[in-house]
Image 1: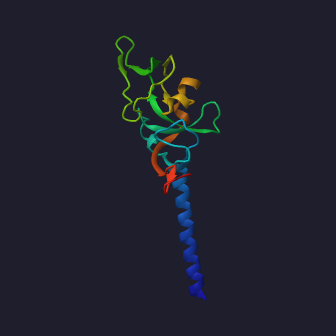
Image 2: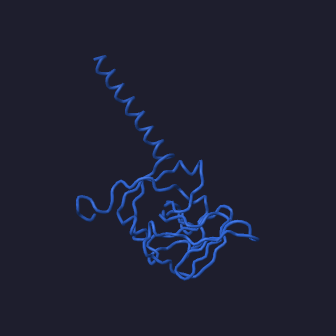
Length: 180
């Protein structure tokens, strides 16, 4: 009888430790995210299951071209996924299908046009606007520029709303040759 109770106690203790570890990882390190909608096509599709890295941005800032998940600034109960295009302190201009970034002191800013061909071959960015980002603001865009609600529509993204960056795509939209 003692052996059986000891065995149950040992199993229970391992289960509790495993659950606490899983809770810690889920709460502070990685988080699942399910893509809803087409705003990130062709790179991420409706139904893609992603793992979001929540810990990296505790030690470093989001970088240009990273794909992030965040609380939508107009309704923080919603989660969005977009690509970081503009960084804090920069001026982002969308004009004639191109994105131009100006950074540095206003007396002598460094200006360049984004080269997005590595992840958006032949895609033009619609709109005509210029945005000066604050110290903790980012300019984010969906990869499917024609069908994305992003910084062109609702403005800059505050740093405090960024949850993490895409770490891994676990289940793509197409599994076993069938669309989910």
